[in-house]
Length: 281
Length: 264
Ligand SMILES: Nc1ncnc2c1ncn2[C@@H]1O[C@H](COP(=O)(O)OP(=O)(O)OP(=O)(O)O)[C@@H](O)[C@H]1O
Ligand SMILES: Nc1ncnc2c1ncn2[C@@H]1O[C@H](COP(=O)(O)OP(=O)(O)OP(=O)(O)O)[C@@H](O)[C@H]1O
Ligand SMILES: [Mg+2]
Ligand SMILES: [Mg+2]
Image (cartoon, rainbow over all chains, first blue to last red; front, side, top):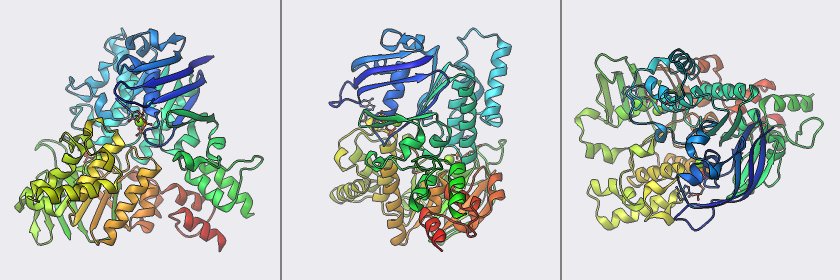
């Protein structure tokens, strides 16, 4: 089933001259895990915000084309309507903190308050995400008395607790330690395997290559390519878009070692190991 | 240049100890600080900069104890780029922000402006002098904070997660700045979670874990200790892991080293 359909999307922020998004079209199936990549300022966050309705409802500006999220046309529905289906983790966790809650626990509970869930279920969900994000030990801290990584973990936990159908994440692990970052990608992959549709903007190419079903490459507001990680990271012109391939791909490319049975280079640690072992043998 | 002895700290008297009994000396090697979220890395550098007061122990910069120094003296000696740029930025234009520290230590206006613009050129923000910092993107804000600290030309420069949100070009800018500082013989200390960047750019690596120093040594040496690193929620760089898996003998730190080793 098509979960997201974007058709000819164009968008310009109110006070800027250039279009932030230019004629973007793509479709995403239910349960896919999609990565959005591209250099700084190409429109990754803007596209994420177009999926949750902040573009255009919050930012205003000039808007053309269509975004359908689980059948709802974003332009014709309020942010509140859309947020019942889509949850978003923002690029800067600081901006996501409500500022009105005394503790991390209450902060995470906030999103569930209007969900109509029974108290017990709420409590269970909060405990579950506190554990999953490994922030149980700081649950009584003020949301601002956290380390940067802990704040980002809280931001992810708040959205996960709501169990949305569609998850949009804007560089959600930029401040996480390596093990934490790996755990978050695994947890998100579990969600997507349970049928949740995931869209994530990210600069960590190794993770994108390992976890995403498909990768959307943006450049100056336009969609350049939307394909598997292997296809995208084997593009000869990748540098022109300010993107570097995963380190595994760079090693294999430098050694001229391609993935067995295909024209592209390995993009993950496992595939690179296999290909290199074969070439050394 | 910096000597830390028996340093302990907690945010409130009854609260948990965030740093306990840290002993470290810093020389002019470029130094990375890595470790799990909440380990106390940012707290540690705020103590070095005198933004937090030590509970126990001493921090000496050169011959003087940090707590005996005035903020202005410290400003001339030690620059800190905050993890969260919104904690650092408070002026209304990019240029004012980059000049602020200089004016504060009584540098004349025209010199301050020249130094600020030079620093902004290093990070590619010279076209945005009149822009309000709050209209910058997260990665640009971070670069602005870096420029503001570079403008001060301090002997000690500390970056708290400078590469957050940076694309390839941004990473290259930061890499160049670190190399430049190293050439000028400054002490560069960087907190960072990007292990490949650590491997490529830092001579020494210190691993923090639960408020203590778990490992400290030459970067290559530190990244050869996979099991200990796991305790601190960190891992060797991707290229190091790949080299180990395919059976290369030495601890490899960069793509170039990998290719060279294969050619042998
Ligand atoms: N609120 C805003 N008002 C005006 N212009 C904006 C606004 N937010 C973003 N822009 C502009 O829109 C363009 C796309 O920005 P966007 O934040 O979507 O990029 P990005 O790909 O997410 O970048 P990054 O990798 O730095 O996060 C940029 O030119 C940016 O300056
Ligand atoms: N203002 C504060 N009040 C109380 N506790 C705090 C405060 N700031 C940080 N802490 C706690 O102190 C510990 C160390 O935080 P610190 O910010 O130094 O960690 P860090 O190593 O920099 O982590 P990260 O990698 O996530 O940035 C954390 O457990 C955090 O919750
Ligand atoms: Mg963005
Ligand atoms: Mg920190």
